[in-house]
Length: 215
Image (cartoon, rainbow, N blue to C red; front, top):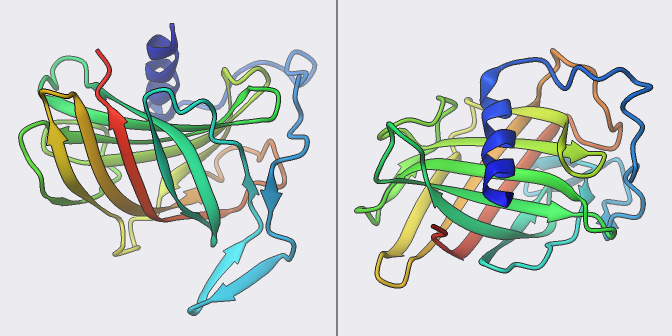
């Protein structure tokens, strides 16, 4: 069920379709972003000439199959993480899925990097291409309601030269993958923002992950 939901959410990100077609009345939010564990307390913070927008930071969840941690808009970020083999025709390539949760246990973000070869420990540039063989892609979006409805969608900032991932190790016997990446995203302005506190520009820096490859 979880795997189906993750793929469904990711495919929705990649489809380029508009956000959920439910009306505002139908879209009554069960958990309207109460009490994230931390938020930047000023509108912008300048660190090393980078201006970070205010952005909510959510809980990492159970981390049953692994974790990811680093910085999101200059603040500490931690998430649950797990890896899956991509579906046909991309056999032999992996996707890393990272998600965070509200204090009620509803999924609030999903960050995905996909197209990693199971046979290579190397560094890749991250592209905005749809996940496919030999192209490492990244997508990010927020979730609302019970964690199964797309909130705000983001597109990779293709002008940022720091969009890259380094695979430290892949152990196929233990079914584990470890790496670190940095990437940044622009809010998709084709759609109205559903949660005003989400930033227009989201920067993930030095996100270290170590997780299981889940069958």
